[in-house]
Image (cartoon, rainbow, N blue to C red):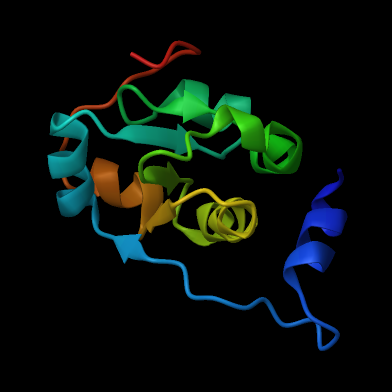
Length: 125
């Protein structure tokens, strides 16, 4: 399935995407991660390698529609990007496919601005 196919499937005849995507702050994310939450990063590999939240699993936005089965459906999943736009799009696709996806407002930039530790390279940690 292509990205545009996923968006069409989520959209009605008017082209509007239905349903609100929940958002949390990086402060809230930090607490969820401490409790074992799953975080996905939907940026490009070079962005991820430069800096990412430790433990984040990389699945670039363009790959999300074909990777929906890699996202758990038995718990909320948190989705992050650079500033929140791409992760919001990913959450819309995931939620349309039964995944309880939550957007991280402000993205990795907010995480870094908060002074929290981060990882580099292609490994999640």
